Length: 255
Image 1 (cartoon, rainbow, N blue to C red):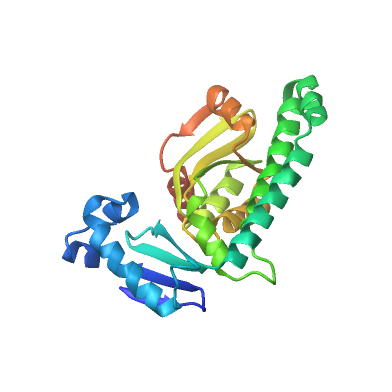
Image 2 (cartoon, rainbow, N blue to C red):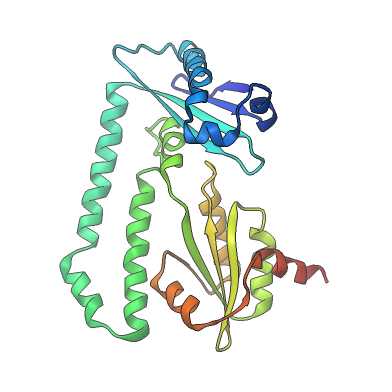
């Protein structure tokens, strides 16, 4: 187990799957908070608390867990004072107010009045703006400590994405650069002369979302998240590759 003190309020612990098995635990047991992990987590809590100078009377010690692609577990321990708690609350409140301003009933009614592709595009645009506002809750600014993002990452759920391509070669190039990201369940569809790749992105505590969007900007005509258009494509388009589409597309370039 490697414990790194990142700053005065944050400690990062990395534990290999093999180390957990040596003490009779598994990564899944840690992530699910099973009863048999309580003694280990209590010991870890004490160790990081000592490193951070944690005062249980006046401070809160937040612990969040991520399971990495190799099966190891990364745990962030963040010490929060009343000032930190207030900053987090103010940031979340501000984002919530911005979301309410974005999703006015007038705008919803305008979307409902549209038809066909325009309706889906307008809805996707609104959802995209709201998603950006939600992401701002987790973004750190110059005055905020790094622990805020580390604490927020685990509560981000998996997201469904769909990328639209003008040809199969563009889809293959996208697959080559995005294959290393924590992506599951990728499929390839074709409708008319366009190709669509659907996938699920697993948050891993790093910048996977931004890396995926960068790939989309470079190779795709459009990259959509949780889009109603994806449901339409999945129901009406021809599914060419039903499993591991990114792997098969990537291999096309090697031939």
